[in-house]
Image (cartoon, rainbow, N blue to C red; front, side, top):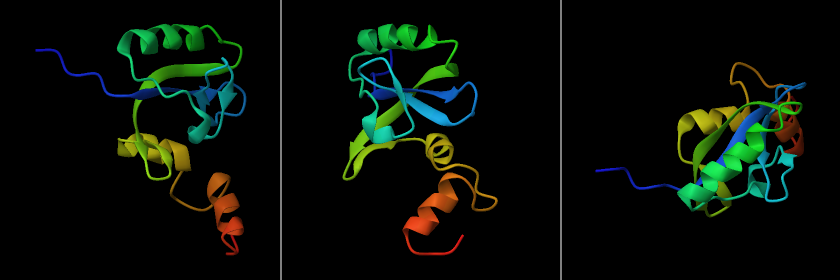
Length: 107
């Protein structure tokens, strides 16, 4: 029996910077998961993935990632995607340093 489709977003890495990015409804890319297109239909998700994969001058490694609508907007359902979204855990830099400074803590 086939597995039921779970909602997804399209994610990839920015070709130049390497940042984690998400595909939006208007065929652009964002670094904010909350702005990603939330895909609830399997056929539509596959078609949108084809659209995303065509942007080879902007992204590398586009794929569908399981996502759910949480209390604070879209949330990854797998720890790998949460890790990608927040960045490396070995020390604060990039996104992690920015969020610490916003919280009023020194990085």
